[in-house]
Image (cartoon, rainbow, N blue to C red; front, top):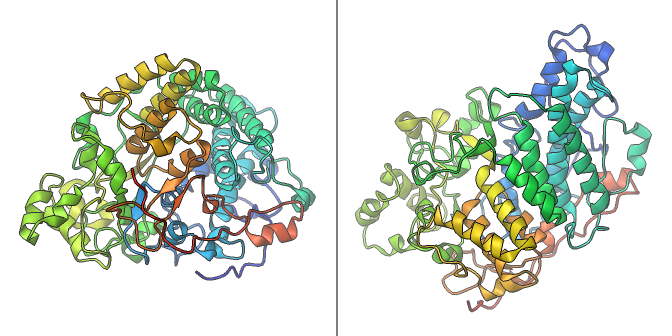
Length: 555
């Protein structure tokens, strides 16, 4: 991984929204003023639209990085740091986060990547809030509400990625510096990291205002947050803060008007997790005009990494180059055969079949394109296998999409689903009254596995500091939300460790590590240029990888 060659440190390093017809401003120091936008047609709304349109499909940092395709890349970055999502080759583009490389340190581009992009998104929100003013007019309220909701979501992510302990463990642990539309340039060089307590109170404050401003707003699609998404963000925040009463309250409010995915929707071979449905509360949609689709054969996109069944043009990191994401074998083996979610992952036993034809025939149970799935595993650069591969995320565009990546990669990505809200409600209820939580959890689990029995998934290792009930909820989250970016957040929030070394593990040799608490590599480093120019900002230490594989854990 190359070192950073940029010589700037101000964290508000770029404005990702389009600014046509608007007088040029200095993206490091200024926000557009009302005077500057007054003569530009639809200028304010363009800035509002840019808050979410910049989240997906754009190259925001470096065109040489195929993982630079927007917000969903951080799902994969966070998930591979743990145990549930496995990369299949040490040359995988996400290997730095999986292998605890020294490139995670503050002098490298990997540290610059999230820092630059997240603060750029925050900058977009601050620009809208600056234009709207402290007391927005009716004309500007909706835009301000969207900006506040999104700013809260971005800071929520950053707080959890950069703090070495979450709110429930240490309210005084440091997160990241807070920058708002009112932050002066001079303050940026003396802006310490906010404590958990300060950061999460700030997040709740933004969400309170967003709830007020978005009251009565009806959106045209789920790519823009509305009041239900604000409720969902509040539920996430209060879950982190362990305010169980409010976590339950807002999780229940967030669910109104939505319904859980059915078995048919979950396992659909054409629309599974690529098309919004009644359970999706918030999501993003790739478009044919996105730079990550039009450039480099669309290889630098979510679909390139997540969709196995696009082999017509021999493009795509997952479908053609052997860089897949698989489910952790032990997690897979703990899913009962009666749980339909197990069908999202290919049985490891298929690799024991004697011939390619037998494997392809067996793959018909999972895919209408078994030859393509077989090729994705056996013709790529990684290990010759298909066991554990994920087919949760399907290629878009129907049959045509399976033979044309420019169509197949145009999927939507869920950012918030009602199932997540139900699991927050369940955990929050059970932390107040365990018997009530167990009943709610049982009701939820039976929609996925009619034969579910509470207590089957409380593996002894995971009893560390959490109750048997929370362990059961966590297991449901790990299966239900697999690949959707929650793995690291939950490990840190619950103060869990990871287990990669065990009999028949599918984790890569030399990276089979077992640790009993959240590993240091889950605490992202702040880019060195920030701490150089802002000496009030401390940093997390560069993580040091274990020197050898751990002894096999005995389940």
